[in-house]
Amino acid sequence: GCRAALAAGAIRPLVALLRMGSSKELAPAAHALARLSVHAEGRERALAAGCLAPLVRLQSADAADAKSNAAALLAQLVGERDGGERITQVGSVPAIVGLLSSEAIEDRTHAAEALAELALDGDFSCGGIADAGAVEPLVQL
Image (cartoon, rainbow, N blue to C red; front, side):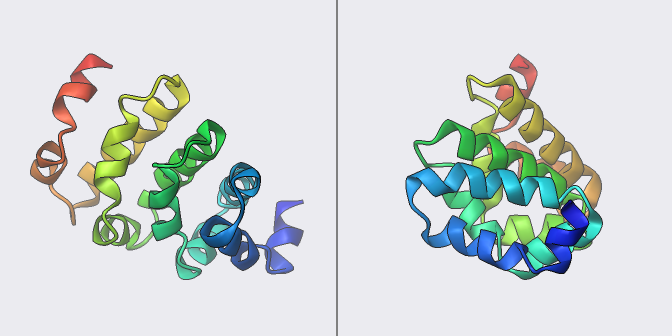
């Protein structure tokens, strides 16, 4: 299962696929990474492997499944130690806010969860979330 995949070092190759994989590989790689990141060890390893920048790029990809899995993973990573700070440093907040307007309810839910975690994080203010344009889409949810 997941623990065996983590022990085998599956995180780094998955992050590499997010960086350089073909459009067909993005959704499965993001899905596998999200599944492995259910565990704290997986989230820590994903952050250490530099997954945030590729996840932000996925938000502008054409693959809806890849976007949805990236949104789920971003929501999970915000709550990790320094996760909120790292997410804001790589410019993920506008991408997360953009997901609030997605047609997929799962994407909107993951985005709202991530923004709620950021607001609670303390390192990123509610004003910063508002400045990123989140208020109107959140109200419309």
